[in-house]
Image 1 (cartoon, rainbow, N blue to C red):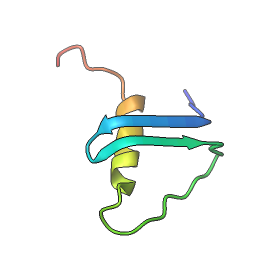
Image 2: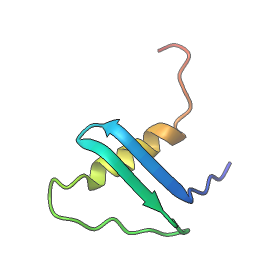
Image 3: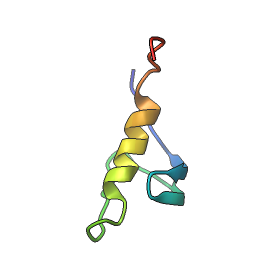
Length: 56
């Protein structure tokens, strides 16, 4: 199943306190300095897309 994100809001995830991204396209680039949260954004998206494991 394909999911297309048009808008993304991340609150209280790792080092990200409040991040909002809108007008997302099919391909998006994350650019920033080291330790600016690029990997945290990707991990938040992966967490959203990963189905919950009922076994915990």
